[in-house]
Image 1 (tube, rainbow, N blue to C red):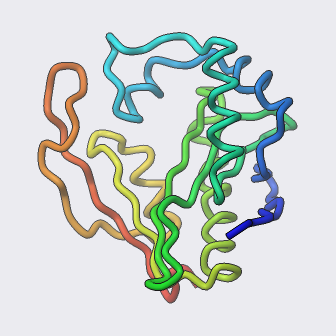
Image 2: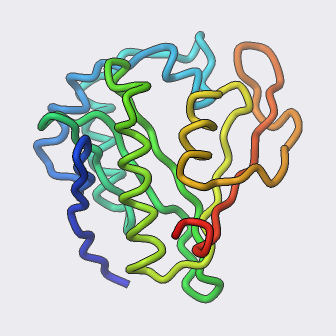
Length: 179
């Protein structure tokens, strides 16, 4: 199924299809060790973004049927995706990453998430969107809850980060809850 993803615009964020020139934007972000840990990476695996990893990010997003770049103030700051879209069961899983530490805690990610969720429920007619997040990523959990996600359970000791096991929080959102 070939998708032409729309550009989704809000006040703080624009969510759009990736472009080749976004390689420079991802490269400029350089990477952040705290953000790396919030995504489940250990300190010993953190590496600064290289031109090659930026190019690989652009390639990965361009090949994904439901992936967007998040832009704020005309700068690439992250990505959002609907993974495992299942039109039979009308469900998908959601992933978002704000990669610019200067853009955390300002509602930009929450707005980008709402834009993608509106697309998921209104355009794709999905019934359910789910996600998993590390239990220690409190900022992300609050943002998900602002958008209506509810905690459905925990997967105990699901991620090995910095030499310790950590739980994943399983969250879900139904179409009627988003409206």
